[in-house]
Image (tube, rainbow, N blue to C red):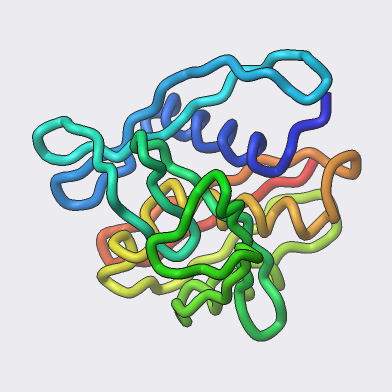
Length: 192
């Protein structure tokens, strides 16, 4: 079964959660729930759905970021992104995840976080269409997690890795990232 990019990103996020990574921002934290879903051909697969919890352990139901939104039940919906030469373009299925910030009926919008665009463009240019390991460091602003929480950051890093090779069937890869105490993100991708 071929997975969609969204399924691939969800699997990657689940892997980070299982590896002990903590998605935290101030008093909030991310949690996941394993769910069995049915594919278009009737086969089933397991995904982890992510939810943001407040400091009292309750699901947060009303939050939107560049790159994602919390649905009515609190589940995180991650927008697809495309890094162009001059901007990031996003696409959201507005029938599943209506926008609270007025995205039009096409579901497309352009990113406004200059640092995120610069980071992803630099990451895209660092990666080569050759098997091997690639690393990059980038200085983030101190408020990065307020504007791009960890699950959305993971999704963005994954999409760039996926896009570099043009999709499924060409190569497998693993990727990871972490942010140090100086707000420097360290990214690694291995194509094999």
